[in-house]
Structure formats: C-alpha cells, structure tokens
Length: 119
Image (cartoon, rainbow, N blue to C red; front, top):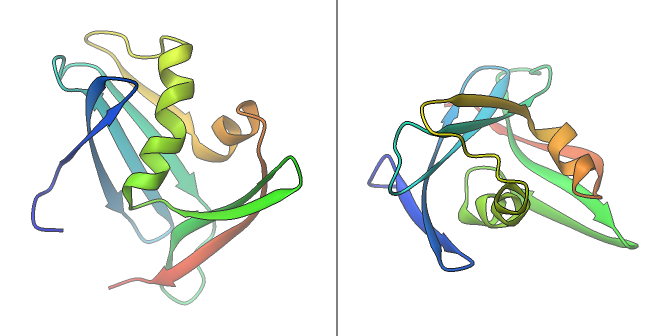
C-alpha cells in the first residue's frame, strides 16, 4: 500500500480507512471523509504466536463461511453498512470497538483468526 489511508464508498458515502499492525493485534480505523474528528477503531486482538499478527477473520452466517482480510477494503466494506445503520460515527469522538464483538452483533459467528507473519 503506497498511501497510509485509503478511501472507500459505501451506500453513496465516502469514508477513509487505514490499519495498524501490532505484535498481538491488528486495528482497523474508519472515519467519514468530511469529519476527521470522528474515528472508529475496530480492534482484532488475539494472542500472538511466534511473531504472527492477525491477518484475517473467518466468519459464518447462514451456513456460509468466508475469510475476510482485516487489512484490505473487504473488511471496511463489511463493517461500514452496519456502522452507518446504527449511526456510530460521532463528531469529535474516538470510539473503540472489539472486532469480534462487532461481527457477532452483525449476525456472524467468528470461527477463526487467520495469522500472518509479523514483519
């Protein structure tokens, strides 16, 4: 990724997203393009094993399984419709959300975390 932030459009609204990888967690950040003071940080934390970070999440809904990479637009595209629907963006607020809990609220069952090598 050449830029630190990327733009994604969901339901006609533009958002900026970026991610950070730490030794034992991967965090996804979401913010409306027009309000940089409103940030939602979605944290995917699980114990690290041998320097591996959390790269993706395997979820199941309606007997369908899929793996979504945290550091790619697919995860932002999956989460943003729910966040929009529940008006979770609040101006001048940084909101922390546990990623697994958010996916469960959306009706997904988290069945695995895919690991990647920490660089």
